[in-house]
Amino acid sequence: MPPPISKGPPVTWMSLPNKPQLFILALCRLSEPLSNTCLLPYLYYLIRSLQTGDTTSQASISRQAGLLVSLFALSQFATSVPWASFANHYGRKPTIIIGLVLSIISNIGFGFSTTIPAVMCWRVLAGIGNGNIGVMRTMTAEIVVERKYQSRAFLLLPLVFNSGVVIGLALGGCLADPIVNLPSLFGPSGIFNFADDPQGVAWMRAFPFALPTICNGTALLCSLFLAVFGLKETMPGLEDKKDYGIIAGAAMRRGVRRAFRRRSAGYTVVNEEESECDNDLMDMQSPKTEAPIIRSVSPPRPKLSITSRAIWTREVAVTIVSFGLLPLHNSAFMQVFPVFLSTPPSELPVTSAIKFNGGLGLPSPTIGLFLSAFGIFGILIQLCIYPSLQAWLGTLRSYRVALAMFPFAYLLAPYLCMIPSSHYIVQSISIASILFLQVTARTFGIPSSVILLTNSAPSPLALGAVHGVGNMLSSLSRALGPALGGVIFGWGMDKGVVGIVWWSYLLIVSLGGLAWSWMLKEGERPTEKGTKEECIELAPKDMSEKDEEGTARRSNR
Image 1 (cartoon, rainbow, N blue to C red):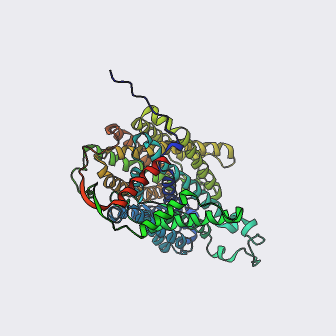
Image 2: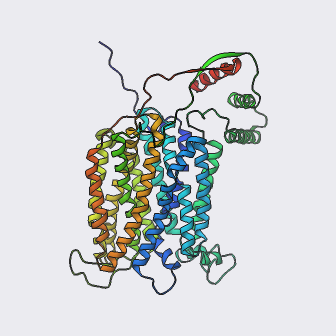
């Protein structure tokens, strides 16, 4: 009788492998939420300030707001497959770096735009720069290959996404129109009004929505720095390629350590690790040319594109459909709900439990506070509750529990406008209840959908293509969702029934996604089947020995 298999120690955040690489990749993931959610608290006021003519109405503001949000995701959809193809040819790291550069440029341009066509163009560029999300998910799968770490590793990117949502919403809500919202800092007598302008800081008066985007660009610049000098390539076949960014980053770290040591203790003994790094750097610059030996290496990297028939199994097809249904209503909620909270209350009386109109008329700082507070709540339950729930119920059941919560939020949301503004506590508790349901559902649903999509891939070679197609469909859904939501919301406002968008669109799509989830299977992490063929190549003897010594050294560390 074979001895029982002993379970290893429990998986914790600190036990994740390759934590520095996951950390840098997570910071790069901030690009999308910062670029996409920062404008949501002030979206209504931005559109209203840029509209010209006498045709301004609540319905037209809603339609243009939906279009502005959808352009970002539409650009992501159009560039998801090209980014995946680019990553398969030139590597994951260049793809991420180029995306960050485009995000920084688009954020700054958006903040200083003064016309609706201009802000839409910058939104398109921002979407192009963030079309590489599938590449980041693939990179996560290549960094963490052991199944026992899967739930936490794949939870990391949604966790950082939620953190970015919180930061973006807080920045957008608090820093938009700073002369009005932060008069003590930027107003006529503000601390930073160095010119003593009687109307506040002059450039902020001309560009009232630039400050949040400047903060976004600064944060993404830090992510770009870490990606260039710290992120390692993970694509099979390119992991060992010389990376001058990594070499320069290592040199900068050594220089900083030496500078601090000289200041604190004069001359110090050279650290063994530091000496090894210097030797490795010299070896990379001056390769040996001694007698070769024969060694075995892995074969050239095979390719599976989205047109490969081996990818399109039933599990992949049904999982990708479910992967696209979730953002179809979640993205619409993210756009419609802030506009709904900003829309002034209706002066018409309520005639029935279905026919009523208007919004809540809340200012952008209040909206940003509500949305960012529940973003923090989402982060906490991702850290503290979701891993245990996923371990207890499994990924698929956790996904179904999440999908079952969305319909309740969409059913009750429009009734918020029936609460008088004088009952502020009741109104706040009601808003918090809707956000509790929706944020909890998406916090459990998004990481579960990513894990299910990964597990549906027939082999590791298909991960890039599967995530590329999944990200493409998700981007299409996030493009259609806000556009449809904005149009239907505006149409409902014209008809005097603000609940149309909630009941005829969001509720129906969420129920359809819940029903479709019963076609999914739990799946397992794709693994290589069989043994890898090996090929023979000539390599210098000392270089082979150095590789073995380096491997042993890293395992000892």
